Image 1 (cartoon, helix red, strand yellow):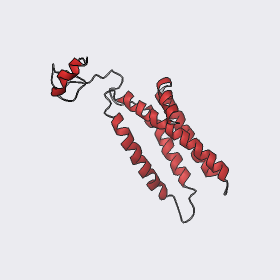
Image 2 (spheres, helix red, strand yellow):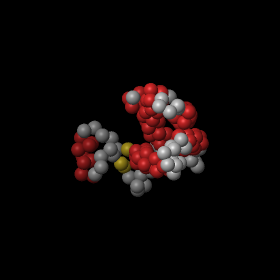
Image 3 (tube, rainbow, N blue to C red):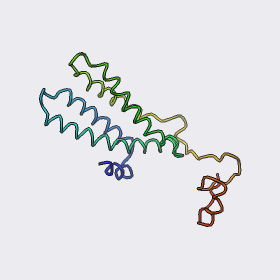
Image 4 (cartoon, rainbow, N blue to C red):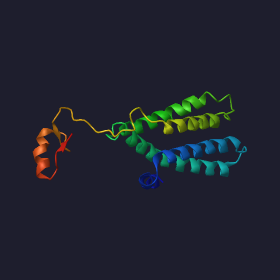
Length: 164
């Protein structure tokens, strides 16, 4: 299923897909909230939809991060933030549980999904203009290697220096 997201992120627009996925997650939360007691088959189907949407969303979040920051620095934070959300979401949802009654948990989940929609529509300040990465020193040529000692080997292998 994650492979479907990898293929789709190259073909579909990022923001509309994330908004549609958030809407789907709201529908999943509403479906869980309305499930009858003992509806295990229906619960399993709703969980399957949730799992599919969740895996698609993960790849599109990375796409959105690259859109916001073409250098890729923000995209490296996406997995850590996803793990943080996976930990904090259940913590917040636990406050909606009273005794054996967990009917408020899907409402918390739907609230988080609803809160995600406006964040997809917001643009960071200055995002309308194209950003270009800057070199650490003016006039300094950067290559695809990590150290100066590897530069001669990289040039021998055909790597070209990138001027910023």
